Image (cartoon, rainbow, N blue to C red):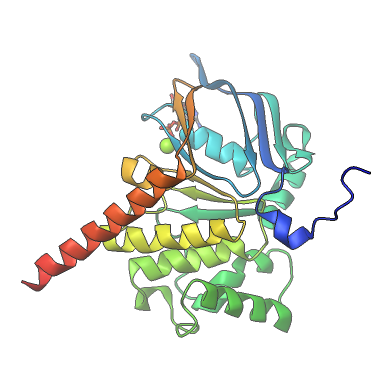
Length: 268
Ligand SMILES: Nc1ncnc2c1ncn2[C@@H]1O[C@H](COP(=O)(O)OP(=O)(O)O)[C@@H](O)[C@H]1O
Ligand SMILES: [Mg+2]
């Protein structure tokens, strides 16, 4: 009897064949008074669960448009975009808002934390919108703070944290809903090399635990750390390449060495 060996769910999660998202001939047009801008002109690719994708491309190539669609902030003009089993192309705005708040984890260049709230409260923000605020949620937020190395900063406010720490709060917040994927828009765009290294190491770890990450970046150094690089140009997919594991390891080592060299120079 084939397939007789049961696969434990947890062990197979990281290398399941399920798709976090499937993008099929997606087009997005913005209709302006005098013209129609074709921001995406038929883009297709799948992201399996557990993948770590860097999206690159020159300014105007459609990266933000694609990110907005993946984040359920907008719908395609044509084509299909599946999140798990759900096709967002045919959803109402209310359904989109629901799925956005429940199933997408956003990380932004500028962190987007609420200054009046503590670390734990910021991590819980996506749950507020769902009216889920019990002690179990607080414990979950506290656990996530520890996961990102902020277990001793639970009651700090954003202005008492460094940029890297704030971005780690944002990453913890992105995980509180158990999202389809982390959607990161230039997550290291505001950070120096040392802090960039910290954040990429955290992404490595989360991805190693089976989290799917989709990240827009314009930095080659950052893209080298992903498992895969998707390049857009003029609203079309220009290339889709895999970073092999040896090259990723080399990138990690080079970037760590550069950080250490920089620190040594600063001590002189
Ligand atoms: N809301 C909008 N209305 C009209 N045109 C837009 C809008 N958003 C983006 N565009 C246009 O779509 C194209 C792709 O933009 P964008 O997705 O922001 O690219 P990128 O993030 O790669 O720089 C550009 O020509 C841009 O001017
Ligand atoms: Mg953009």
